[in-house]
Amino acid sequence: MIKAVFIDIDGTLLDFEACVEESMRCGLVENGVEYKPEMLETFHKINDGFWRDLEQGKITFEELLERRWATVFKALGIDLNGPEFETYFRKRLHESAIPMEGSYETLEYLSGKYRLFAASNGPHEQQIERLRKADMLKYFDEVFTSGKIGAEKPSADFFTYCFEKAADIKPEESFMLGDSITSDMKGGNAFGMKTVWLNLNGKEKPEWVDFEIKSLDEVKNII
Ligand SMILES: [Mg+2]
Image 1 (cartoon, helix red, strand yellow):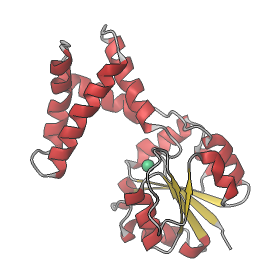
Image 2 (cartoon, rainbow, N blue to C red; image 1 turned 90 degrees about the vertical axis):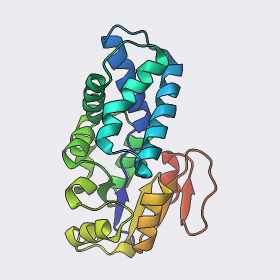
Image 3 (cartoon, rainbow, N blue to C red; image 1 turned 30 degrees about the horizontal axis):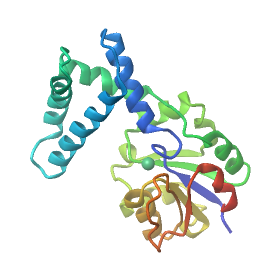
Image 4 (cartoon, helix red, strand yellow; image 1 turned 90 degrees about the horizontal axis):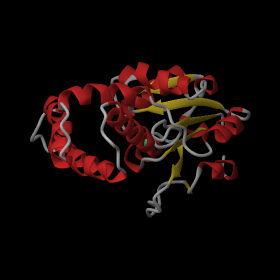
């Protein structure tokens, strides 16, 4: 019998991409720069390159923060201070909470049937605040974050902590709902949970993932 649903936050309940766009747009406008959508593409291209370099150990996270906006502004011909904008951007991003389509309906529906837990790779206070801001915090028995636990999805340490806290629930009595194959689905599956993948980009479902949905309103067909 299913007792609980664990739900990822970014890309599942909150639209992280929209939060990035909003933070960049507002930051530029506040600095008197006219915002154009193609600027976001430039940001993503440069940002992805920095994250790749970070993953390959070519730069440190501090270097990424120091350099990425300066690089973006140089590419766009914008005369703003990169590191200063970085500080603004990150603060704004951490406060923004734009809901994904269908998220409230899904939380209403699920909370009437199951106990709900948030399960997120992110800083603890920040994720709590963003859920509160989006008026979603009230749906959750507990918010589990990598920031608090000290381990990230998909690691077993993350899920061990969750099920120690929710001691009356077994992994096989719970679903993991999220948009990431590598963190949500891999982690939940390896821990013996049932998995529901929010596949927004029409990628191919790995056969070991239990269920696939194209939008959150399909959750009620499954859970
Ligand atoms: Mg996610």
